[in-house]
Structures are given as C-alpha cells and as structure tokens.
Length: 342
Ligand SMILES: [Zn+2]
Image (tube, rainbow, N blue to C red; front, side, top):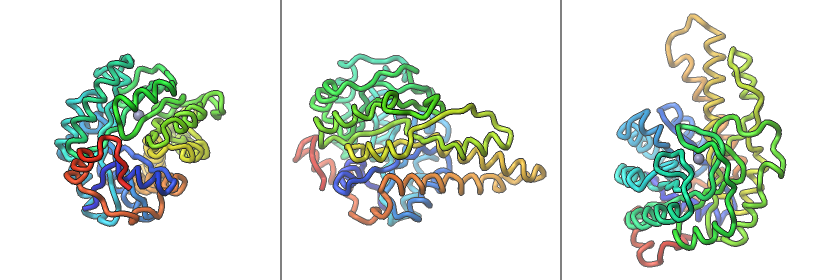
C-alpha cells in the first residue's frame, strides 16, 4: 500500500519544484481514471472527497474504492484528502475512516455557506491541527472565500486573501497547507472572459509565498474549463454557456510561487459528460452502461494525464517511501506542527 500523508507529498513537491493535482471522486470510474493517469505518467496523486461525495457514495464504499486504488497501484503514492471539511467533527470522521489529510474550511461557518470571521477560522482550524497531527494526519486551512457554489459549499461571495492575515493565520494555526482566494470560483462558470491579472490575483500568491516560504499553498476552483470539452457537450445537445476557467499557464506561474496542491474537479465532470452525450448520440439503441461509462472514464483519464504533465508531478511517483501515519504522529510530536519531512 502506498498511502502517503499530504504533508510528505507536498514537502517532496516543494523540494522538486512541482505541483500536485487533487482530483475529486464520487465513484469507481473517477478513481480508475485518476489512477490510470497516475500510472501512465508515474505521478504521485491526491484523491479527495467532499462531504457531498461521502454522502453520495457512502463512507464505506468511498473508502474502499480509494483503498483499492492503493492496492492495485502500489507504485503510486496516494494521499486521501477530505475536501472542505465544515467542522472538527467532519474532519474527525474522515480521520477515523482512514483519510491521510483533511481540510478544515473555517472561512465558512459549519453550514458551509455563511462567511466566518477571522477569529472563528483561527480557533476551529487550530483545534483540527491539534487533533489531526496527533494521528499524523495533514491539515489544509482556508483564508478568504472563493466565488461559486459547488456540492452545496460556498457563500457565492469572493473575499480575496489578505497577505497580512495569512501570516497571522499560519503562525497561530500552524496548518500544513493554506488555500488562498485569488478570485477563482468553484464550478464551471468562473470567468466571463479570459482571466487577466485584474481578475486573477496571482500577485497575492507571490506576496504570501515571499512571506511564508515554507507554507504549501493550495489553489481551489482551478479547473481550466477547456473550450474543446465544452464544445463536445454542446455539439451533442448540451447547453453550457460561454465560460472561462483558470489557464494552465497561470497555475504553472503559481507553482513557481509556492502553489503545491491544485484542485481540479469541473474539468473531469465536463470530460465525462461530453463523452457520455457523444456515446448516446452515436448509438441511441445502446443501453449497457459500460457503453458510455468506458469512454467517460477514458476522457477523464486524458484530462488528468494532461494536468499531471502540466503541473510537473509526472515522473515523481517513486521518489520516496511513504512515512506511515503513526510515524508522522511521532514526528509532529517531536519536531512540532511546522516540521519538514524532507
Ligand atoms: Zn474548494
């Protein structure tokens, strides 16, 4: 089994100067698509599940799908991550389930909708850091809020991360990774035109990275929403309005400035939907789900492969041996929350 903590995976990425895609899963085909792409490119990978995903597939099914991934692909280092935990209880249940990393999103109250104040965020995140690190589990926090609402998460309001607050937040919470809000949104409708430096505040990432050089930064809502994927959906009867995502070259710019984890979900959804629509259109007499799920899985694999190559994680799967959770717990205890693994 090659289960790895996100802390180690991101420390290694920082050493190697690359980023790692974090891909969301709900079902078998998504897990297979991501792992096949990881094998094809020799990439370490983060598989993440939102609360919505856990509800959709059920904790036991989801966990065993992820566990199967580590068994079938033993050469790949996989971190299992709770995306957008809304409370210490949610993070605790993910840790009990066997996840090696949790996000405590204290930028929102536990309804996942109402923006929270800074003190609430610091306190709730610190609580999760104490709890998670005692089990060797990694913690991602979030400061600032993203636009858009996905899987019932989000206030729909954009509040860019303030670099002064980011420094105070990391000092007080001692999180391993920090999600920053730079103007991106969850979902497919991020920008109404190609984003430039006015709408995508990459300078915030540069400033935070200068002041917190050892904190791993996370970009949420970072699907690129490629036009060719949207076009396939629309060509076969879909109705996706013109929209722009985060260009891959901007993500690569972020990776030069401390971005280590890049969350990608929408691009896989678009790829799957386009492939399924195309399959339905090409042979309306087919009714075996494998007829349309196979091309959906292949289309997702292509997207994941392209992102793994673009983020630079390709070829790094075998760079290191994963440290176990109990060993990580000992390291946190001995070296403190702000340890370095490598
Ligand atoms: Zn997110």
